[in-house]
Length: 91
Image (cartoon, rainbow, N blue to C red; front, side, top):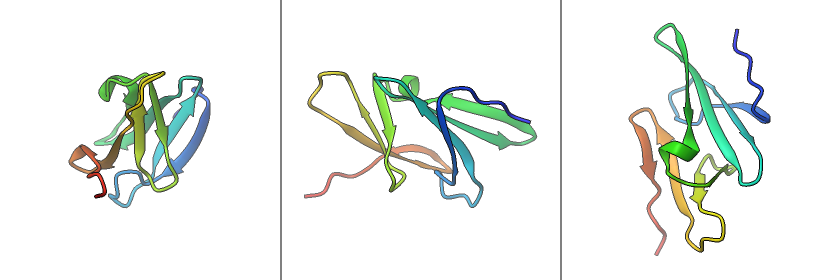
């Protein structure tokens, strides 16, 4: 049993491993968490700390956008079974 009270939640396979994780987000700036059940334990990651960003937003294409308030640069990341990787910029 996992109780999450950090805003809006969804169940999505964000890392592509075939199992759904619980993703949660809330606030302004946006804070983002990912919860999963792994090796018999529930674990989570606070993506704002992991990406060193004030705001982290999950898009519909499962790419996380990380930015700082008032900043002009948005960094994009995807979660894989191996970890968080930057999304290559399009030419």
